[in-house]
Image 1 (spheres, rainbow over the protein chains, first blue to last red):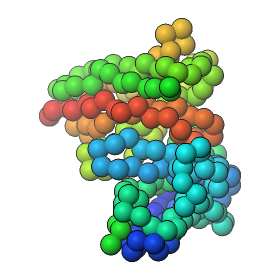
Image 2 (cartoon, helix red, strand yellow):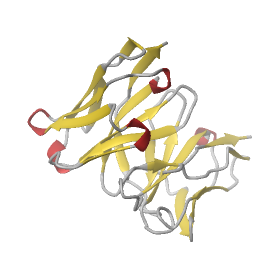
Image 3 (cartoon, chains in turn green, blue):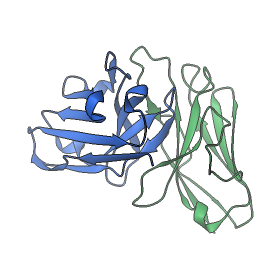
Length: 112
Length: 118
């Protein structure tokens, strides 16, 4: 199972909106509405930000939103803040016969 | 409060073995799939293995099959990862993770570091 493809980095100024893409195949991202997104600050464990493509767990800011089109999912961060500078990973359920989990390659968000 | 605490990591020589443990608290452990995710220094997340609520099904990333074994003891709210024939590229921080459903990982421990020396 190959990793999902994400851009290595995305940057934006405070207050702007940015989007991070996550490209898979019809066997994972495109085949199911089970894409999730994680935020990881340096030295910290990942934190679930979005699940089932568009759902936010309790306590996650509504500045974070998710969407999907075909085999590509996206995480949008609006009103970018300094604290949003972190690594972001997507993940998807897969129909692989081994039911392996798969993560994206990861994207570092820089707040300029 | 939901909490996952890993232990058992350390420095081991290439070819050696380790058993990682994860103790869960604050939720009904036996009601969730659980998994291990690892992260090599400076690298991304890699899903390692998962196990069904009652332990009746287990899945592994292809590259690790035969060397790693995931298990659980619901009476102790504990998850385990037995690692054999360790190699330098197994060096990573190993996270214990709760799966709330369909590979959506809602709770993470702080991780336990495994370093394999060659």
